[in-house]
Image (cartoon, one colour):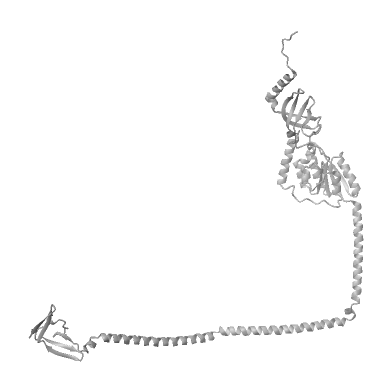
Length: 456
């Protein structure tokens, strides 16, 4: 019988479904929460399941995405996963391909933890001076759960190491919403009593949710405000809470907390015995030394013959006196020398000496002034004689001695031109030896290079 329908192969149907899943925008990016199941860590890609009470989902996480996971997945752990839905064609199974995963609830809590940590660090609460843990406590307060293993471990360790200390349990909630208020109340109660030397606060390990009360800000500030040193023992070595960071001492286990809080009584007793023996030996040694010293003093020559001691002191005194006299003599000579030097300097600076020096200098200057004045007068006289000789050489009288004369008319005016004469004019001849009166009889004139004679 021939069918009217077209049958698909299994591969064709699977590929069709694969394309449907790939093209669906709602399956390209999905956010799933569930519990890890069938997890076995492999070297590269990881294959496991996510489940809840209603269904199971196959999961694939490739190596590149798995290397970015910052925690270790474990069976039964609740996680938040982000990825896409696809179909594995060979088996025909749909699966979730995860590219990011984190523990459920840890993301928000971890962010709150980091924010509070940064805030308290900025305030300096982590770097404040730590209070010393008393070495020999009398009473220790333990703040923890009454039914937990913490108090049992502490009691066992304390009874073994230091049974004389008094342990007082202050039961408190260490998990849940009321735990933070319970821890703060117990811390305040212990401090109000003021008769405890050390406080141990802590609980056993657990998830971050279980340990969260020890990450509350009010608990951290109550630990900082405590007047009694606080030892924090919360979780295990890998768990670090805010309470650990602000406490005066942080240990990994309750046993370690008890060991920090108490010494070993037998060791301390042994140390006391050893110190007592050492003190006795030291006292015996000191006594022996002092006894020997007394014997040496008793037999000392100074005590056998006391006068020798004074004789030596007298000799020493004589030597000191001699040194003192020498020093005084030397000092006196030095002072005398200085007095003479100062006297000489004063004499040089005396007003009388200065007046005498200035007087001598004034006399020298007066002599120099007289000498310079005589020399200047002689020079000026010589220069005057030379000028007189020059004037004498230029004098008309000097010229007239050689036979020259000058003529004046009747009015006494000097006649310089013969044209001014008229015949029978009387003139006066002035010569070096005297004057003579003459009458003009003849006039000879020179005209244009020739001569003209006028006879009178």
